[in-house]
Length: 194
Image 1 (cartoon, rainbow, N blue to C red):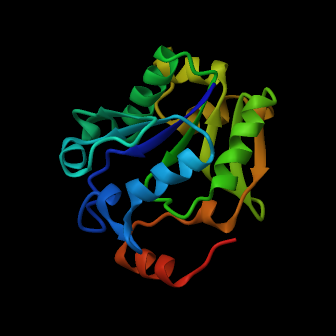
Image 2 (image 1 turned 90 degrees about the horizontal axis):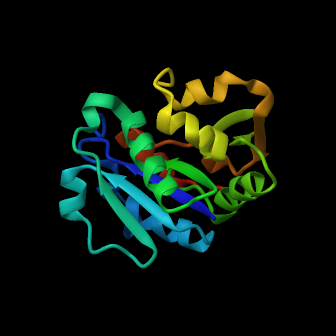
């Protein structure tokens, strides 16, 4: 089974606080994306920091939360490793990774990446108009690299290791739209993504 991993352990210094707790409309980024993963039928592993864990409500059905004790130490990749390790422990055959700062990614975007993994791809990346974005999917071989290959220090290392095994899947414009600043948040509030 393919699992979703929501990377939500960042401190959000550029935007003034953890992005998982920022609201867009009437939902936090975390709540919005939890619903999106559920809509795509993907069991969710959320990797959060302690502040986010203390502020979020009880886990939604089908969600597992893991606290990254020191997200500053290893950056986002430390959260990727924690999430992939949990997915492997649960017997996942692939994972769909999404940073929480992409709250407009759609059910269809997640579903397309998941379908790419189900068809046997090792690495799947959502793209829009020829530009790669998020989410990123990893099959079993790539998951093993993340979990155990210490030469791998970033998700980019996994993607670049063998470009021939990477499949780009068309996604909505939202796959390119990360929210890092107050201006990004304002733009997201004003736009409708297809």
